[in-house]
Amino acid sequence: MTTTGRRALLTAGVSAAAATALAGCTSEAPGPRKPSAAEREAERVARAEANLRLRSVTASRTLLERYDAALAAHPALAPRLAPLRRSVAAHTQALGEGGTTVRPATASPTASPTTVASAPAPVPVAADAGTALRDLAAAERTASDAHTAALLTAPPEYARLLASVAAAGAAHAYLLTEGARA
Image (cartoon, rainbow, N blue to C red):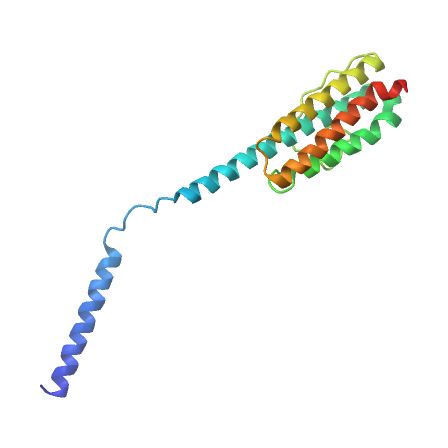
């Protein structure tokens, strides 16, 4: 075989291989790759944590709205409620970090930039300041109970945060009721 014949044969072989490769690229590709069991489990865990964070932030946001409503209805309670409200606002921010969108609310002049954006419905507040404080203490206990219940399914780092926020809520409830009598 001559050199020219070999080159022609080699060129034809390369061309045939390239055509075969291109045909493989243009033929129907198999369907989308199914996620592995580990990938599905990781996605399930991520969704569960995002839902947990959203529920936790919502509970704190609701409590924050209660503080805002109580402060608007009873401005004389501001020296007593303002520090507790700031604490709840900080908790709302901390609970939302790493997975829940938190941005400023515009509903109240006392609202902090830590509240989850939404259009809050008016929160009813008792006309009597003492009753308003008891209602706020009950709201603190409700939020604290929600955070405590969430501990069962929370990842370790978030569970520690939830435990701290729940303990603070219990202390706030005490300060709003029993602590005032001391």
